[in-house]
Image (cartoon, rainbow, N blue to C red; front, side, top):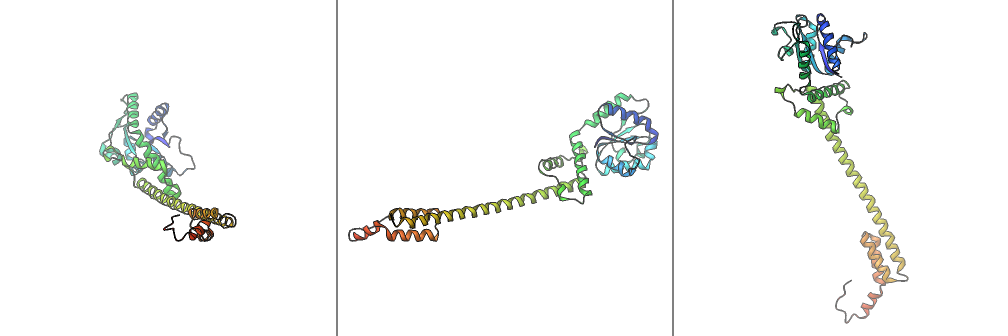
Length: 289
């Protein structure tokens, strides 16, 4: 991705070469077809991709550029993708003759008799205005275009912090400040939000399923432990009925299984305390255990 895309007519190549050099010296990444297009590239598609992947679209105004059909298509493509358009007047023309996206913007002046260094300073100041929003626009547009070219692949949507940043960027849109998302960007974010909700729902379902399995495993452990204690209770009845009764009750506390209930019944039937109470039936009014 580049900072700046320069659209111009070949008649203004000398000026554009000088402008490109000045911007590169100031560490700006410039996309200009002086040398950026490979001989085997599909020329117009390469141009349009350069516009999409640049933060700012600079249009060098001259009688030749406003008459150029290709320059007009470049300007229209920049406007369709809501790129920041910076018109630079190199040679005088009537503003009505300029492409609509160019004529509607405030022009910077770089005519033959204008101070070139002062012009470059004004251009840099313009480029740096609202830079964060513009850079995010470019980044999101490139991602959205890749997603669209891939058939809107759900695996390419935004996630996590990237999605949060895109949502904040959309909320900051403001037509009065020329902050306009494209329909493709809005669709990309909307699909990303939908996918995020669906991922959250699937994660919640997985958590519930995991909790269900964990609960089942815990219940199985309780059942096994209750059976183990109930078996120990039955074994203890042969030598210590009161210990057997206590173990049987503990088995029921761990989990009230049928085996625990049977162990309690057996222990109560064999309990010495129960026999003693029965022996004093006439004087015992009530018993609590």
